[in-house]
Image (cartoon, rainbow, N blue to C red; front, side, top):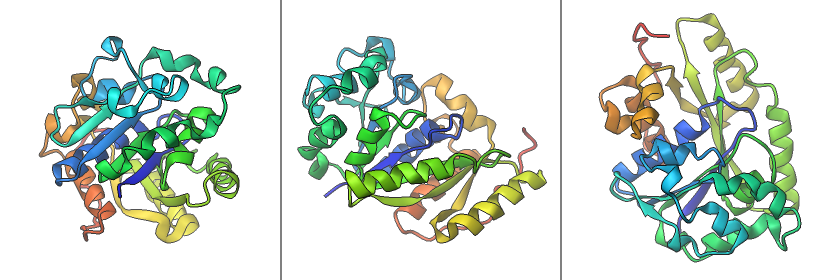
Length: 265
């Protein structure tokens, strides 16, 4: 049976979509069959994996509001073994439309019930909010992955997210677990990055992954070419660290040493 992981943080700019794309890609390259679900109306995971969101006819909107089967919206990607459930602008109104819908929190979970056994991993990219789209992602998931950038306000708001996860676990999805906290956008040339990493490890203990994703220009550039960083520049430190992270998620030992600064911001 496949594992469903929702990537979630209500704060924008944490590397959530970047992690969704690159984790999904690395798992697929490791031989796993993966579904990436774009649950964000901005559709950045859709465009970032190389699919034009403006050409998408059937999206996750149709799964949530019209109860279309998820296999009918899946699209192959340039990555072997990786399939996308795309988003488009239709999803923008879904938060409002879901308010009065029957079983509104479980629409995605029901849609995935038929497909879960057909995939090793299902990765859900949720929007930067704690609304009904994110709640659908959390209700459908086995676990939640929280990306946290290594910046001053990084840990602010995590208590709110933790409370939301607890509410979902207590009331809607008792099986929901915290997969872990992934530290992103690290710049080891600054004391601030080191302080945030230490504070996160003190607070979240063993829930913080050993792998830390560095600030890396290749990671930043890749989405504009519609490619995961492993396809854009497989030798970059960003690509190597996302590969390390996927291996860690799979339970394979990795080298936890920090990325060597590349002389870039």
